[in-house]
Image (cartoon, rainbow, N blue to C red; front, side, top):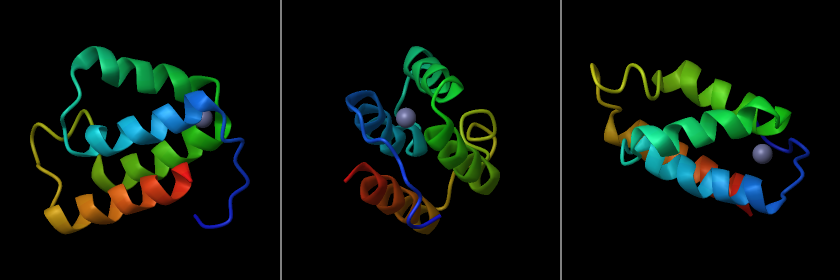
Length: 84
Ligand SMILES: [Zn+2]
């Protein structure tokens, strides 16, 4: 997942900022939907989210199984790096 070319427009930056909260389960349903809407027409972010989802099961599975702190930290770091 490194070195992926990504057009860092403002919506993407916002997406990645929110992603940290998303990982931490701090987003309400509406924000969650905004993220999913963004990735619908943003392939790089979609690829990223798919990776995160594959790893954590975000959103849907979060309620059943909390993300381990260590994994959460790693994902947040990843999201931050991608947002640079
Ligand atoms: Zn994007």
